[in-house]
Image (tube, rainbow, N blue to C red; front, side, top):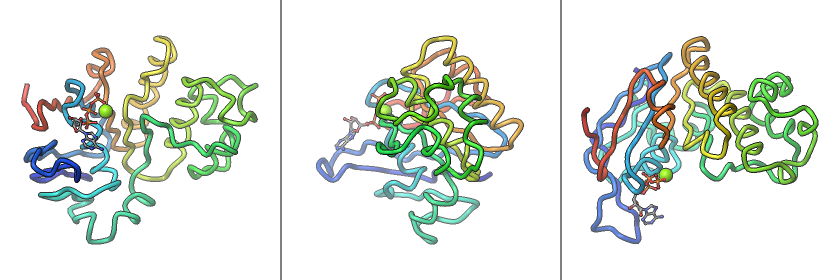
Length: 210
Ligand SMILES: Nc1ncnc2c1ncn2[C@@H]1O[C@H](COP(=O)(O)OP(=O)(O)OP(=O)(O)O)[C@@H](O)[C@H]1O
Ligand SMILES: [Mg+2]
């Protein structure tokens, strides 16, 4: 087991009385491809943010290799253990596609950009001059460049056409099975969800077993 949410609770500061996550316990392993599903507002992005160390739970803990991520610090967790593809892609807006992927931790961004099927003429273009779906693919390539053992993605295929989305899903699967990473993907897509080794379903801030 590499990553674990243990009795996690979360309430946003503006609405302290309302728990968005309620006693979530779930374990994630390397070499596995997970999907997190649930209705809009169920708490999926919130859970992913806590697993990423973007914030800390208001109850319970997130453990990486058995250790509370607060112990080493959230910065250390974010920098060394997880790579992220989030709904807003967080690309560096004054850099090109290639330069953004390089920042993920590779000297060979071309390889990854061709894997995510970004057209070659877009590689050296400023990312703000790419379409939403192209930016999304750059964000995925950047996450794949990282040496972190855990890859977290929030709706990574949301802006993509069906064929490109299927290619990305196959790539995420190989990233888990062949590169041995723990890949955790939030999705509304039934197709993507069913490709997972394990599906985690959230309803009203709680894990529900299927
Ligand atoms: N910054 C915030 N402040 C207060 N409440 C928030 C904040 N962000 C999210 N929420 C609330 O927390 C709950 C869970 O939100 P979350 O974004 O985790 O849902 P989600 O499952 O990712 O939904 P979606 O599928 O629409 O992305 C929702 O009721 C939402 O309104
Ligand atoms: Mg969300």
